[in-house]
Amino acid sequence: MLDTHVLFKTYLSSDNSHSITLQYFDRAWPRTPSNADIQSLYPQIDTLAATPHNPSQQLPYTAMWERIHADYTPFNHPFHITCTLPIDDTPLLAALTATAS
Image (cartoon, rainbow, N blue to C red; front, side, top):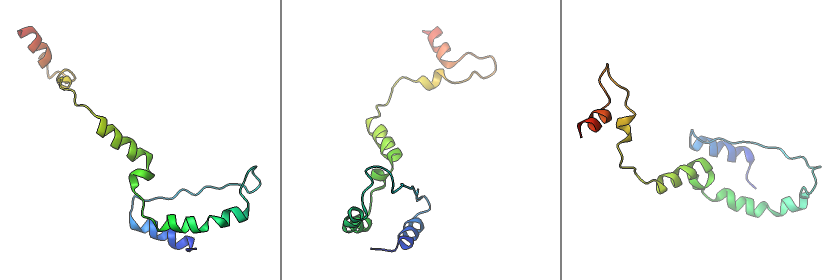
């Protein structure tokens, strides 16, 4: 099994945006796996550690924005015109256009 310090250092040094959150679980909690169960997972952990991960699969925030951008349908109504604040005392462009027609 690889040294934990080396894994953390490699991961954190590879990109400034990488971070690690360490969490704790109490061995006395109900249904906590035994040491033998945990040790039986070491080959799978080594395989997963050696596999490069796609950031969009790791970060729910990134996956959410990718899906929003994929499903986005542009709105052709010029709502930005009606949201423009008036300059001086001149009416909004939308108001001028509505009164002119």
